[in-house]
Structures are given as structure tokens and as C-alpha cells.
Amino acid sequence: MKFAMSYSCGKDSTLALHKMLEQGHEPVCLVVMVNEAVDRSYFHGADPAMLERYSKALALPMILCPAKGETYQAAFETGLMKAKAMGAEAACFGDIDIEENRQWEEERCRAVGLTPCFPLWQQGREELVHEVIRLGYRCLIKTVNRAALPMELLGTYLDENAVSVMKSAGIDICGENGEYHTLTVDGPIFREPLLFQVGENLILGDYAAADIK
Image 1 (tube, rainbow, N blue to C red):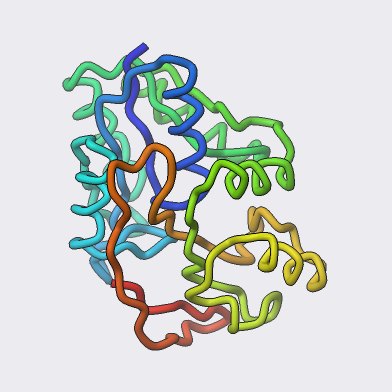
Image 2 (cartoon, helix red, strand yellow; image 1 turned 180 degrees about the horizontal axis):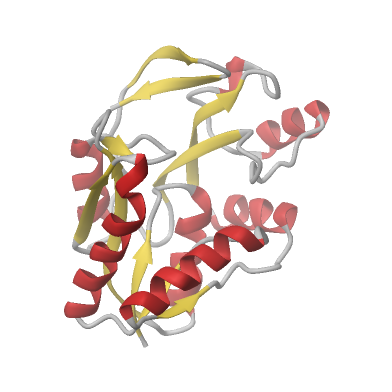
């Protein structure tokens, strides 16, 4: 089956893409939502140069969908329609168990005539984090909720040490409640690692983010 990957550049969407490839499905493109206000990908904050590197490293064309909050839905559907025109029969998502998110994505797929796929659905949050690490993916911790996690994790990799810190903090180690976000910069499906620089930590209200370029 040919599919478009709704790609955040983080660990979950990367693992979902990994599993679809493992199952023999054929990706046609990456669909990435971009926050117009800051010109970075939504939620995980990859800048334009980094997004170009993702497309090259994963050997897939990327459909960028610039949006504001009020235009997010329409922009996403437009991106899915472009993917369909490229031959996609389905759209794949990295959601695990939040029903509201899945329903929204299913509605967007229904609107454009694509089949939604959720290869990580109900597999267990902690199990999936350990699978990402075990497979050898290098996931850089980009953002943390300052009330939940120490800022020292910013700019470090998601590994067993980070998991230990997260468990000690009493959070969901998958970060599904927004405790942290990652950028995956290398791993089995990457043709080459992403090169990057880690700048200063930025304070963004309740969150702190590493300025990764």
C-alpha cells in the first residue's frame, strides 16, 4: 500500500514510519505541518534547513503545510490531497492511544478519501519508548515541560539514562501529555544522520526548548 507519513520529526512518527516500511508498505511523501508564526514544524520545532535534511536523509519528498491555529485543519487536508495526487492511498500517523487525536485524523482522511493507518495504536507507551531506543534511533530531547522535567535533559538523547530521570520524575516516559518532545536525528531508516548545532536554551512559558539548528 502506498502511504503518506504525517511526520512530526519526533520519535513516534519515526517509529510509525519504521513499522510501515517493515510491513512492506511504500511511502510516497512526508506531510509536515509548519507553524507560520515561527517558521518551524509544529510541536517539535524543526527549522526549514533541518526539514530539508529530513527529506534527504529519509529519501522522501516533503509536503510542507504552513498554517496558523485557525487554518491548521484546512492546511492539513490540503497537504493530504497533494499526497493523494502523488499516489498515496493511505495516511499514516504515530498516535498511540489518545482517542480524540485519532478521531480528528480519521475525519481529515475521510474528507480527502485516504485510509488512516495507526501502526503504534494501543501498543503501550513505555514499550514503544524502549523499542525506539533498542532499534538504535537517536532522538534528541528538544523541549521539556519545566514543571515536570529538569532542563538538564535538553539537548541530550533519549536513552536509558533519560528514561530513568523521567521515571524518577513520575511522568509518562513517552511524553504523550506534552512532558517533552524529540527530534529524531539518526536511525535504521535514515540514509545519513542529520547534522545539527545545539544553541542556547529558550524559555517559552511553562516550557523550555533547546535551540537546535
